[in-house]
Image (tube, rainbow, N blue to C red):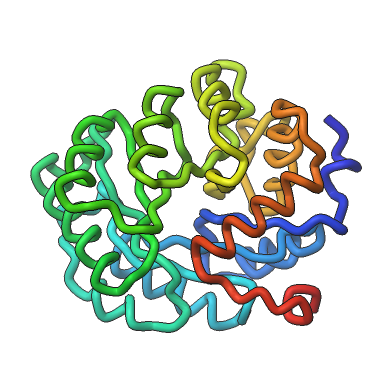
Length: 267
């Protein structure tokens, strides 16, 4: 894969899930991303403190950096106190990330289930997208979603499942978001899921600073690496890179309700 190809700045991308700190390094990451065509970022909160931080950070980059507010399943034992108030901020475009993670169980499963269900309620109440983290808990996540009714805009971020999980999620009306994992040689089922997902039903993300794509695996990830993931997906699907870029751009804007004023996007 040629880095020259993926740095075609005539293409426009949105990193729909990353974790950028409110720091000089974070500001540099946003500027570096813009330089390779990643015009917009969704910066994701994982608890009350980080949700506040990403909102503050987004205010420095109007129409380029957007924020979410939520409690990651690792932090579910902290509860949801204070999150509802943050969802009223105009810079917040989604609820989450939230969900279930039974791989580490840093919070008790019962607390994770309760807090996840509460996030679903908030997404309905505020008519905001729901950003789901799912790990080793597919059946329970699907059961909770079905019992609460999935919000009309729901995404499984950093989707790690295979075709079976993808089919169930898509049948629930959710979108999938593919990360650098799809480039890993040991992620064949994830690759198959991506290939079987309609082009207008997925987004892409870096999940920075985690999960750098091949050929950068093992390094710290950054939003500027998103075009590498995009090119890999385009090659695997045998579609033109511009076609993929344009479709993912449209899908992501519609999902989060992002501003689409061309004069702002190109500034």
